[in-house]
Image (cartoon, rainbow, N blue to C red; front, side):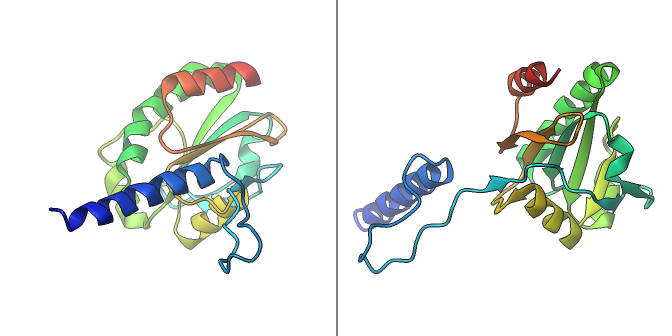
Length: 183
């Protein structure tokens, strides 16, 4: 047990440092001359949502232009991601409640087609679910350069300008507050 304590403390310290770096609570550069490479920069959102075409659950190619003029809630997720799965009922509720005000939820899954289609058979989605593997990863990096995990959710205005990005599981009060700013 005493031998494990230093490893536990090292892991805890690394986790705290990573959290602080990711959230920009500490500087993004090491002091000069310490011999260490510079720390990576925090992920940066694009100014505008990129144009894209991805297949939906039926294999039909869907273009981002279909949702021009709407406030978009673009959620990147995967079937193997528990926080992603927990968000789905909330996103269904948000689509139902806010669609009359011009809000469109889009789910973009970074996963294999077969896994997503099988997964979707157990859920009732009322918003488009678009499927990609490498294409979805690339698109995720176009929305949020350097993203490091799933889920993440991007909020755009009616002109496609990215106004907010939320990394990690999102909760109702967060979505409602963000949408209140956009509507």
